[in-house]
Image 1 (cartoon, rainbow, N blue to C red):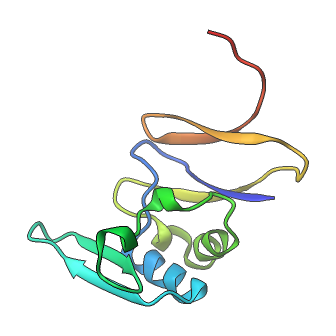
Image 2 (tube, rainbow, N blue to C red):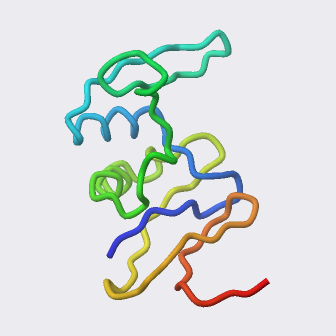
Length: 113
């Protein structure tokens, strides 16, 4: 199974180019709004709060997300991110662990606090 993670400190952020390609692959209409801070917001199909796209909407093993990162390489990464695809065995129960935005895939296990 392929999973997308951020390979550097900073956080998981897609570039605008990657978001546009993702929308194209998913068949979503891409509605863009540039904020007064020169930041682009992306909406799925129509401009409303319930249609606002964020990277947290995606599962990291989403097939279209993986394809975008593989197709675009470094150009898929947003500011302060370095996205990459890692491959893990299909039968592993996993989660993403991070510190300061630097991520890795970890196998699930039991934890007590």
